[in-house]
Amino acid sequence: MSLGWSANDHKSAAVKRARNDSGNKVSVVLGAQWGDEGKGKVVDLLATESAVVCRCQGGNNAGHTVVVDEKEYDFHLLPSGIINTKCTSFIGEKQSLFIEKEINSKFIEKSQNALFFGSFITMFMLVHSIGTTKKGIGPTYACKASRTGLRICDLMADFSEFSTRVKNLVLQYQSMYPALKVDVESELKKLKDYAERIRPLVRDGVYFMYDAIHGLPKKILVEGANAALLDIDFGTYPFVTSSNCTVGGVCTGLGIPPANIGDVYGVSKAYTTRVGIGAFPTEQLNAVGELLQTRGHEVGVTTGRKRRCGWLDLVILKYAHMINGFTAIALTKLDILDVLDEIKVGVAYKINGKRVPYFPANMEVLQKVEVEYETFSGWKTDTSAARKWSDLPPKAQNYIRFVENRIGVPIKWVGVGKSRECMIQMF
Image (tube, rainbow, N blue to C red):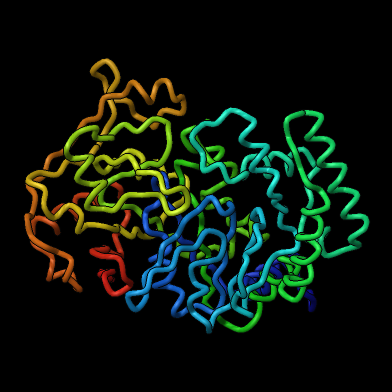
């Protein structure tokens, strides 16, 4: 008779400990289209109950708008949850553009973040444009990938060594782009000032997130920038951003394990918009597109460019769900459709009359698809004052349920206006 534990007993105990030590789960908010879906509004709503709000990827090419007490805030780099003074805001893997104003003392920045230089914008303008925001995001990520980039931890270390590396980096890029002019000393002077201003706010991101996850029970919220169809790997390449805007970017941007990802909320408009060039199957280059653009005030927060507008595309929503595994959807800007006599929803793509059973990765193919639509009668009723499901007209309810059933993900919120009060919570 054995009085000791067997190997299986030890294994079971280890597994049990691992499960008990898994810590807090993070809730994630991600764009399910080409961006500008209203992620900031959803984050602002959830941040009221969160202890930590994080941005996990991207840069100041994002533009998130939040309206609180009739005051509008536009965020590009900071987490939208920073409005909530009771929560700590954390910037994960991003290009760190510094802000020329005082910021919340509970703002934390990750020491591994890549540094962005003003000259990157100039450098970008010397290279061909593919309709991006021209914020220097691409050169920053290229610099990071080529292992020549500088990070916040370098700025926090010996400044003379940092200065030498900056000068070498500038020389490297000037050899590639002879027209690039950089006032290195001026840049270094600004960076030295920034270093002292942000020093008290910088933490090692891995340890910060580990402590947040494994500390006292708390709600942790992660705000993704851009959206699934702009993901560098899974988006409509090459007309994409330079980071992973899908759920994998949460792990790589914050340094957390997949086991600590809880709910993943996808955000989609009740129609579709896109800024810049690239394929857009449901785009409406007609009066409908103009109406959506005008009623929806579809102008980019970051660039001021008019957004292209079209019908809701369920092919891209289902594709985004396949990648991200959404647990629920926030459907925003339903009220923009209030005046339409009929509303269409893209449900499938066809090429040469045959359905395409997947989302085309090749942009030449995507440009050629014909969209198959389902058509609904408009509800022709103002929904902006609706605050609960029963306030919505039956035809609007039918539209929402159709979307929900087609993508196979429950819709948790329906937006009918700008403020957080205009988000109808379904469950």
